[in-house]
Image (cartoon, rainbow, N blue to C red):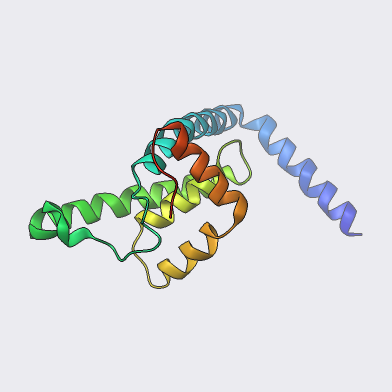
Length: 146
């Protein structure tokens, strides 16, 4: 009975898709932009990350952004906005082509929320994730993460 329900839902989805080719074209275009954007943006962000990011507290106060309140507020706003965009892109890339897990990790490093550090450490301890990040950093001439 469940198989029949799934087949009926699939048939309904295919009928809807047949009636809305413009929406499908836009979704395909969005998928392509997210895929190409992730191939360009994610390696840049990973290579710019401090090697000691996961072992030391945030050193924001040592930069000019940490000392100037207006610049700090604007930077935090932009950083969180980029983090939200990358979070949604990473979730979409879990089912569409792209670097979903790596995109999610970069998004989490940009966002500010309670429990962030624990989640980041859990993800970065995954051998595959750590290996991909360090490979990306080595290609950019950066040292591996500590």
